[in-house]
Image (cartoon, rainbow, N blue to C red):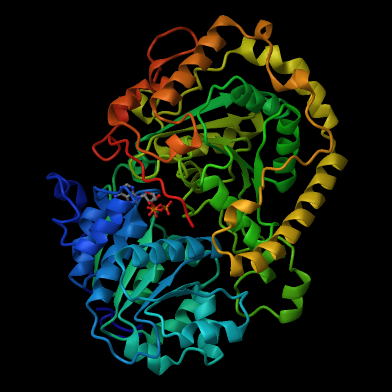
Length: 603
Ligand SMILES: Nc1ncnc2c1ncn2[C@@H]1O[C@H](COP(=O)(O)OP(=O)(O)OP(=O)(O)O)[C@@H](O)[C@H]1O
């Protein structure tokens, strides 16, 4: 479908945007979309039985061979929207002696590459079809690329930089790509250029054959997506969900309730402790910090109160990061503290960038990884609450953090702790989202369940403990954790090559401090709790039980549709049993209504 870059067809014939909302009127099923029975059965085994809106529109078009640009909000199921028709097309492809893959999926980060690879492998296994998929990363030695590609896989999942390297090292021949490539996918397209892949993509485009079907998936629209469209696609269907116009709806899933808490920077540890210790938020919880030190400070602080958590940041070795994600997704721990550092100048030489000199890469081996992508596109399973301990630097960053909850048909909540210094960015975020004081459904209200009294009851203990988490303690823990994880990483690598199913062996939420938490800090004594807080906590627990969230095994099952109304954030305020200022149901659209989540354990 696509022309090459120098085609005279470039920049022409863009089809008008499709109105997805109107197509969504009648209930679609995977059968009615024309999906192969094997894929439908595979989806059923994953407890997925109804296509999401973007899947409803994208799948038939992709099956028809159209080039598609799909823009849909975070967690809307874009991966299956392209993977399912891609696999179906490969099922029916004439077997030829192809020297290059028939399908290439380009993603911006190694984490995403692993995620997509796992998803494709699992579908292939469930469908019992003889298709092969490989994943290549720039950190692999060139002989490994050769070995992987010598198996003649039908699908290659990788980053643009890696493809360019394969081309320049002669591991992939341009003529083979020209003969073989049928489908090219640019996933998280809005991120590819910002990760510095423009040159790498340009190196590939002249070799993309005209018949190759090109798909571009993204969560937001940006100049970068436009640029890529011009570079790769020339006769595409543009799918936007929902239609441009309602900016807020465009970016934040309707099934996520957003709240904020005003507090001083100094009190942030006290507030997060109150939220967790008084059980006012639902698990699993993903907490964002802006610096790695703050992540460790929080971990050490919570540890003193008997709350175990794991940290995830760009400094950790890749194996460990992937493993932490696997364990969190599998429900082995409930609190993950993520530092979503953006690509910084000092890190640039440790990524997939193909121009990097070998020496600097070696030197930067354990420095922060510029290809690390905690926020964008990573599918954290069953996160109910996202907490911004530090506010993100941009509105876009906010959207992608919040997008880690409320994925597909599940519900979620977010709480931002906003200090006076962060009010400017908070205002920017609100205006980006179209926060409207007069329209309840468009605002970020204060979190209703945490009272001043409840916070003050914990102040003395929190401040006392916070003092003991000194800069030196943080630095030591950070170094120790890194040492542990490097060791883990080496062990993981060797061990998992032989025993790929033994991923449960290593725990990442281990205590960092040598002393166990003092018994009196583990539990909050009854006399410290006021009646309102007790009631709020009880309601949250009830809601958790009603939603099947009480234990990991249940968490991996379905949530009942009718139970969602029991979410206390929609029915309770700390002042009493008044309905919360912003009724969640009001915001629920057709798409956000179902409660059945897909919960799968990665193997
Ligand atoms: N039809 C469906 N029904 C239920 N769950 C689904 C469906 N399709 C996908 N999912 C699940 O929804 C979650 C989010 O999907 P996915 O990662 O594809 O979202 P996304 O749109 O790519 O999000 P992001 O923009 O953040 O990358 C995944 O866990 C996926 O397995």
